[in-house]
Length: 358
Image 1 (cartoon, one colour):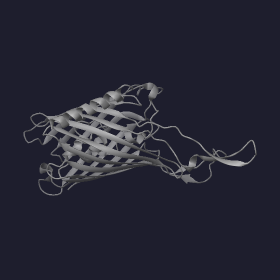
Image 2 (cartoon, rainbow, N blue to C red):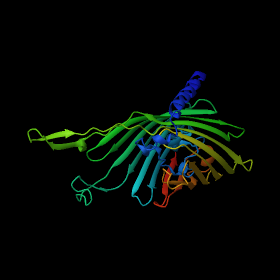
Image 3 (tube, helix red, strand yellow):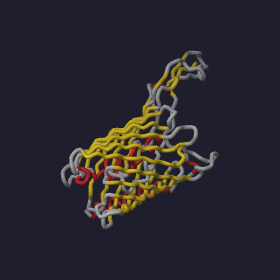
Image 4 (cartoon, rainbow, N blue to C red):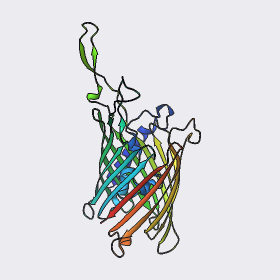
C-alpha cells in the first residue's frame, strides 16, 4: 500500500513538472482546443468558483479532483443544467452516476457533459453575410469513467478516463484525456484538507470529415476535381490544481460550520489563477458559499482574456429522505444553485443541480 501511494504521488509530481514548464505562458494563451473541459457544470462546486479542490466530494469531484469521489457512501445520482454566458444561447447539461463497490472496493463513477451552442446560421463562401437559410447545431460532448478509493483514513485518490468529442453535421474531432487527483484529510475533526489534481492530459485532436472536401477546376485540363483540406492538430487545455481548506466549527455538535478554501491553478495554455472562498453550513441541510478567482490582467479591459469577472456564489438545500440520513450518510436529496459573474457583454452563468444520495 505504501508503494502504491508513493507511486501515485510521484506520478503526479512528474506530470506536474511536465506541465509547469510552460504554465501561464502568455504566448500560448488561446492555442489549446476543447476548452469545454475547463468548464465546471456542477452547481455546488461552481458556487465556490471551483476553488474547493481539497474538499470536493461525490460525483462533482470527477470534474475537479477525482480523489473526492471516494467519499460516496453507497449510490449517488446527479443532474445539472447550466445557462453558460447568459444571452449567448449556450446550454450545458451534465449527468453523473457513482456506485461504491463493496466496503473496501472503492467507488466507480460515470459522468457525461454536453455543451450545445444552439442553432447557428449556415454561411458559405458565396453567401458569407445572409447565409443559406439553413442552420446547424454543434455538439461538444465528453464522457468520463472514474475509479477512486480511500488508501487510508487520510488519503483518497483516483483517476478519470475521459472521451472527448466535438462535432457538427460534416466535421468531427475526437480525443482522449486522463485526470488524476489525491486528497489528504487530517485534523482532530478531519477539518484540514489538502488536494492536488492533474487534469486534461491526453492526445492532440484534429478535425476530419466531409466538410473539408472541396471542388476545384484543374488549370491544365479545365476539368472539375475534388480535393480535401488538412487541419492542424490542437492540444488539450492541461492544468494542475493545488488546493487547501480548513473547517471551523462553532459547537461540539458541529451543526454550524465555516469552511475557508483556497486554490492555485497552473494552466498550460492560459493565464494561471488563484482564488479563495467561504462556505457556511448548517446541519448539512443548508449551505451558503461564495468565492473570488483572480488572474493576471483581469481588471484591464485591453488585457483580459476571459469573460469571467471573478466572483461566484451559490447555495444548497439538502433534505433527508429518512430520519437521521444526513448524519449517517443515508438517502437524501440535494438542490444546488450557483451564479458566476461575467463581463458586461453577458449576464452571468446560472447553474442548477439535483443530487440524489441513495
